[in-house]
Image (cartoon, rainbow, N blue to C red; front, side):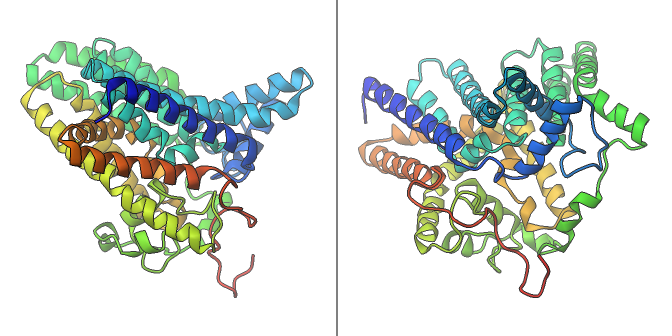
Length: 442
């Protein structure tokens, strides 16, 4: 077992390496290659030019809530005004990197407040997010996932540590909704947290007051967008728009309950989402995009070395994933036994997010929607619970400490190798998987 000083030195070095990977990717990864990034750039540019919200059907991203795009447009406008428009191509994704690091900082803060003096656990919590492939992708791609992750994490942090500030939690959740619809999970988790705690204490008057403040704050910061949609366009949120109809021909095209209850061996042996065995597996596909580049956004499609590294990384990822599951069980026991612990909001956001993701995968039965980055709301619970269990294992004895330490170190190396764009593997083809058959038109 390393000394506290050694852990501190190692932790600082690992944080520096993780930041380098993200900055390297911002400078080298084509910023229109990320998930929907080309469409997001167009939306930002349009906002920066005419400063008016476009019709929701005008493009791929124009039906999405506008906060992220408005921030990007402000950056583009600022650099354009000083004659440096090209700088926004670096500044916008760098803001994403900062937002991702903000999520890490909130996770470390939560751990330090709940377990003061446990420096090892704080470093482990930071490392779990810094070396999570989905978190790296989310941080450097030009899309709204990282901003909504930060806002949801901020909301949950407030629920866990500042329950006397319901309006602040409501405002954070409303801003999350104004960034992406998945932010609704933060609104629901806020309401559920205060409702359950109020029922346990039979304190109905302050509970109703807190719920009213949450609703009011969320409506003022985020709900106005949907009210505007209804007043101007006749709907709260459009679905099935013409711009998105290309997805209707993507596989598999339908889902069954069986898709939610099996994880094929191909999750590990061929971690790319068009593998026939993996194609229908919801959680197998999600896992392959959590700990690896299952959509081949960063990595070449047909390099056997990539597949081998993916197999290794996904097998190593089982350890922190198991630790997260065990930590959730501990959190459930604590939440039942003691009111007022941080576990209730952490469990609420986890359950609501997983349920929402499951429904979304059912309603949209196409392989491209299965991305672990869509579960960005789980960042804080994952770091909190997995770090608790892993720290216990590291302190169990010399053998356990070295075994867990080696696995985590190899996992960090694997993530660095797969997420550092064009360092070990040169990607020459366009990003993504080719889902069309030879007989289909391009």
